[in-house]
Length: 330
Image 1 (spheres, rainbow, N blue to C red):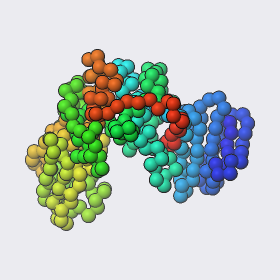
Image 2: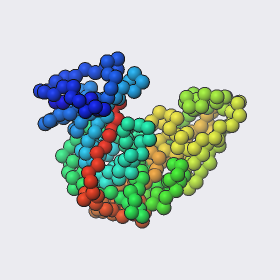
Image 3: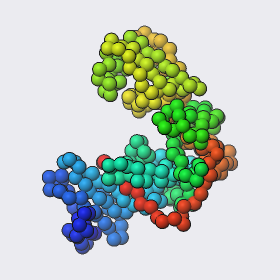
Image 4: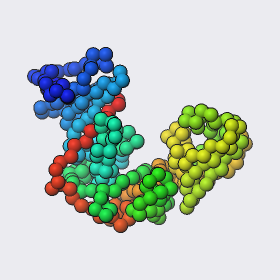
């Protein structure tokens, strides 16, 4: 194992395997930890590649630096079931590769490209790897989805509930032709295809106030929709009016409460009853739909072209290799 001062390149330690315990109080400069012939274990979990440790305002930040496909080994089984058919796994591998490829160098002031959470896509390192998902990554190595010869923002989600959402209705700046709404009858077997939740007005206020502390007692809520999906929510309250996007409203609540923006609302005593379809933002590839298409005999390229309209698939393997820097906050 080798530990190197990241800025000067001077080795701090070089020798046999070692257990290093780092603390924010003692680490003043970022270090790089490399292993010659095995994974590096961080907080009990094994990772490929190398690991950078940064002290950011008194908090340690671990960044996994690794090759693209090694990164995808830890993404694909974190995002979908490893038991799904091969073509669905390959479609997920290409979508995930394209998504992270698009974000290379776009981290701004961050010292990493993407983090390992649903803010980008879930990455759990070697602990979740399987032979089936690794083979799907290898079989599509270098392949990305393009539109006008540029890598697309390949959004994906669990279940669309019957039709996907247009990108412009969910994400600001996502008015791209390839993110158009498409009919999707293939995700009906998903356990998240339909859902119902009852919310009291005081409960809604409690969750929304975490991001909007000035929210007063709620007097009324209006849901504005496009193609059946809520695109904006207007809350009239004692302190005035609050207007937020439908997706932002959904994300104020615990994960399985308001699962999508594809819902209808009806009044109930002291609150609302929401009856909805799907789970996730609804843009791009529906993962359960990809499973349905794969089970019906469609190839991974058929699946990707179905959800990302007018796109092409190219192989970047002849270009210089890219490394991913993944922030691990475990």
